[in-house]
Structures are given as structure tokens and as C-alpha cells.
Amino acid sequence: MPPSYPISGVHGVTLLDKVRSCEIRKALNVEPLLRIERSQLRWFGHVSRRMLHERLARQVLLAKPTGKRPKVRPRTRWSDDICDLAWSRLQNYMRLLLVVRYLES
Image 1 (cartoon, rainbow, N blue to C red):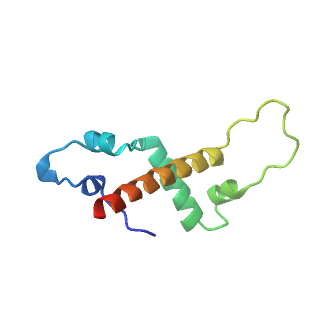
Image 2 (image 1 turned 135 degrees about the vertical axis):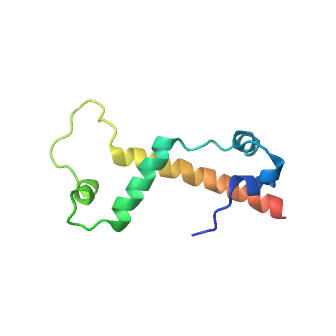
């Protein structure tokens, strides 16, 4: 896994500069993760990595529903939300990585 950089370090400021995180995020064009998104990703990582296959939460996470789907638009699944969150987080990380490489050169 690539190293993670604190957002203040990427922007080149320290705590002594007393710059707010929201100002740094605005300067780098990075949106913050909401508390709900962060906790969902943490729980997903816990279940997918640490839980045994016999646990109910792991079985529900890996379950594939059977049967016919309705003709109307299907409801969004929790796994779809997790995929969207992971994809947006990856895009933010790649954007930050480009900024770090630009600042280092």
C-alpha cells in the first residue's frame, strides 16, 4: 500500500501555520469524507478482512440473492454504495498523489 500523507503535509503547511483543514482541502480541490462514509468503509474493511466465514455479517456481505428482479428500477444495494465510496476515494487519492508528485519535482 502506498504511503499516506497528511493533507497538511501535502500542501506544505505545519500546525504552527494555523491553517484550517477546510482551507487546505479547498486549495487542493479535495472534498472531505463524511463521518457516515468513513464508518461504512471501516465496517466493510473489518467484515471483509477479519470476520470468519461462519459469522452472520460476513455471510450477509457475501450473499447473492436469487429469484426474479422487479421490472421497476431496483433499489440501491449497500454494496453499490460501498463501491461508489471506494471509487470516489480512489479518485481523490490519485488526485492527491499527482499534487504530491508535482510538489516534489
